[in-house]
Length: 204
Image (cartoon, rainbow, N blue to C red; front, side, top):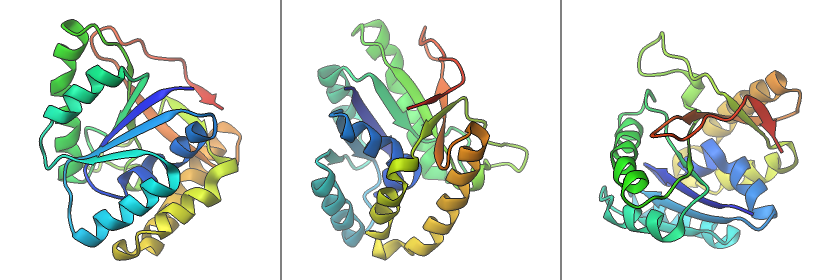
């Protein structure tokens, strides 16, 4: 059982980029807390809240303010923090990564809280420049929960879910082939202030 915090830009980012990991962890009793820095439209927020209630996770909309996130990290002492990739094609995703990184020195050095920080996959595994490719060093087998992940994405009727589902099916299947499972999500561990990189492996 783990304590996991997700810090993302928009409602549906969690389901698309790390929904399989979240479902796996909920199945073993882990606690999940998610923060969104950009709320977007009311309908999108309502869709997220329905998913959160269904899953039993805590969700906070912080309107681009990191104060509550900082306080919750100190309170919850997470095992993992998951956020966007620093070179994501989406500008707001990159801003979220930057804000997360800015919080870490004080949390680790002055508050003595240690955790593993991971970036999740990006659209088409490509970055803001064509030469940038997301190279995962950690893979999560999500084969047993993949259809449930798809159902969570479908809940976002306001966000053209068929487009995202087609993308994520290809992406998760590709990661699965790389690691010898049917479907997998790829993550990249960010080494910050003594956080040790884990070996490349499939995590069950």
